[in-house]
Image 1 (cartoon, rainbow, N blue to C red):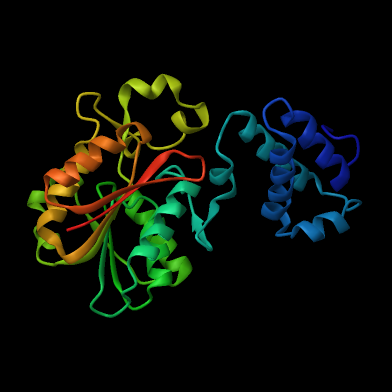
Image 2 (cartoon, helix red, strand yellow):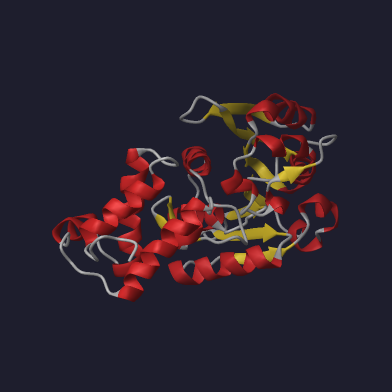
Length: 291
C-alpha cells in the first residue's frame, strides 16, 4: 500500500510528501482540502474532524490518482472539474481556459462602470470560453439580455453546461471574432456592453509558459500571431465602434505588454475616456472605454 495506514491522516502526509517539491505549503494545504472535498464533499471542518477515518481501497486509489495528475502538471481546476469565479461555481475542463482572478477583476470593473439592469440592457461577451464573464454579469444583472460568442463549439457546449448548472439564461452563438464584419446576427443589435478576454499571447512567448498551461489549456484561446498581437482587439474595436449604443461600454482583459497599443487603437477609432487599470499584482490588465 502506498500509505502506511489507510487513514485520512496518513493520506494527508502522503499528499504532502509527494507534492512538497512542486507546491508551497499553503498550496498543499489547499490541495489536501480539495482532494477530500472532491471525494467526500467534506468541508475543511469535516476534514479536521475525520483524521482517523479509514479509506477504502477505491478511495485510496482516488487520492493517488489525484496526486499523480498534479505531479504531471495537470491544473487543479481541471482535476476538480470546477473553479470559483465571482461567487459562481464554474465547471471547467480542457475545452476552455480556466477562469482566473484577473478576469474576476474585469467583471467587477464593468459592474462599477455600468449600472443599467433592465430588459433592454444588452451585453455581449466575445471569446466567451467557459462563459464565466457572461454568466457572472448575468448573475449580477438578472434582467439584462446576455450573449456569449466563441468560435469553438466545444467551448460553447461547456458554457451552456455552466448556464444550466447555474440556472442562468444566456444566449450562445458560434462566430469567429476575427470575422465580426460578417456576423450579421450580432450586427442587428446595439449593445450596452461589449466585453472580451481574447487570445493575446504571442506565439514567441510559448517557451516561457508554464507546462500546466501549455500542455493542458486550449491554444486556440491563448495564442496569436507574432506579427499581429492585437488582431483580436482591433477587430472587436472596429465592430464595437458601430454596434455599441451611445455611451456604451467596451471592456477588455489585456496582455500587460500590449496595453498601450490597445488603448491607442481605441482612441484612433473614436473611443473616449479610454482607461487602463492595473490588477492586484500591479500589471496593466484591464481597459474600459466609451463610444
